[in-house]
Image 1 (tube, rainbow, N blue to C red):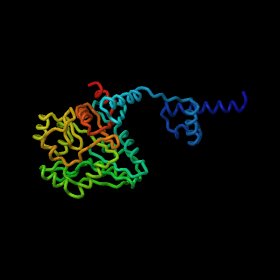
Image 2: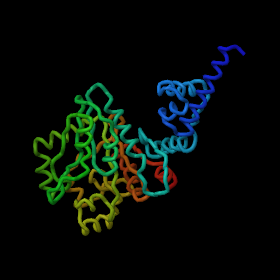
Image 3: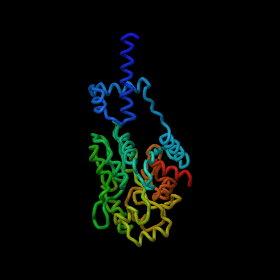
Image 4: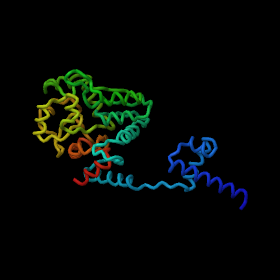
Length: 318
């Protein structure tokens, strides 16, 4: 064997070792460099070589392929334009692990347009997790719009005002909705919505290129209840009316119809209108939200979904 051929063989041997350490052993490039007694740059090149030479192969199979299959099934069953399913990685039936990262990736895809975009947000814990996962960006050309009021009956602002947090992280223009989530009366709602600045926010929401919303269940763990927007009597009345979930405080049943109730007559939130050109994406998962998610998908208030493997499977089999 020639010296050149031997050198090439040795190089591939080193690349295979580096690839194994990185992809199988979970070692960092600094750790690989130390073990192989080389520079970090050389270790990085060896890892890249191991992939380009086919020494390391990555195969998409369960659970990723399963997630793609579930997403296609959800799109077909509910007539969605977009669905992403993330792998379920633990045994918690109500786990939302992975939704923050997937939601953030979807938001960043919208933010990376050079042309000005209007992006609207609901509220909630899962959406806040998406906002927390966003990269620090500089997007002064975009408008971030709140779809929902952010003030409770006692005057306290909600801790989960997602639009504020998103705008802060990506340095975009921000249009909040500083009004009660639920007005004290139908008349008060009309007065609020006639205010010029609120009317302007609703117009921006209607123009949104894409919207992201959470999906809430209704019960003792309902965000509307826990955060003080509805009381025990109202919660009981909603249960008797067949309420199964809410999106930006609009309450619907499992068939997706907005229910006739006092709360829906006083909600100040923008009324969603999902279209293929202006998608509305729900981000939610968990056995405790299954009825709410199913109702949301039937409601046509949204036409996109980011959820977990476990929840997607349950939606397709029930």
